[in-house]
Amino acid sequence: MPPIEYMLVIGAVVIVGAAVQSSVGLGLGLIAAPVVSFIDPALMPGSLLITTGLLPLLTVASEWRHIDWKGLAWGLPARIPGTLLGVWVVAALEPRMLGAAVGAMVLVAVGLSLLPLTLRPAPAPLLAAGLASGVMGTATSIGGPPIALVYQNEEGPRVRATLGAFFLFGIGISLTALGASGQLDRDQAAVGLAMLPCIVLGFLLGRPLRRLVDAGLLRAALLAVVACSGAVLVVRSFL
Image 1 (cartoon, one colour):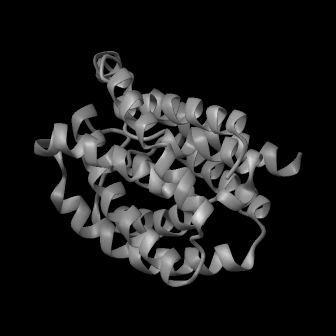
Image 2 (cartoon, helix red, strand yellow):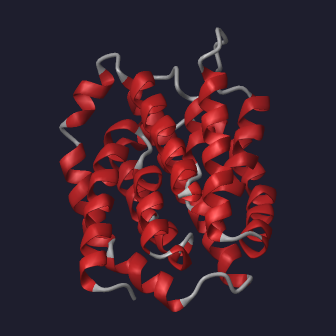
């Protein structure tokens, strides 16, 4: 377990990340993962996967009527082979290398999303996003960017609810795979469970932000959160 002062820092970024995710649809892993990796790379990805598991449950409970079940039917199955590949990546690469690789992939994805193309939640993009999300989510706890980019042009409630449902199932798959492969230890579990109250607080703080995000700012907010996180991961890895 990290010292108490480090736990307080982790708790603070988890609250901020949960507030962002409860309004935009993602952000917890994107904001917290670089900080947790910097404090103790050995805590990744298990601790954040445990912590982030509660937030999509709260989101789905509040906005379940807006879930795109058809999109989930295409994206979720692809997460399984992606998860298996992510388990191999965790075992094969150093934590800092993981951060650099994921950060680079995120920045490339954001750059592609700025091209004059309209990306919609169709079968092919959802399959590719599900596979990429499985790899990234299992290896680094940051599995949201691929799916978020597919849904970036949809309405706020649809984005939050669908991402929440995808995260809920996907995190369960990733934790099961990590546990079965011996990549989930006691310290990761202890830190993850200790951060759950911070998730609830961040979720409540983020609810008033939904009106602002839903008033035409969702796509810009999604791309900003994703791009900043990718940049932070790359810079932290080189430093």
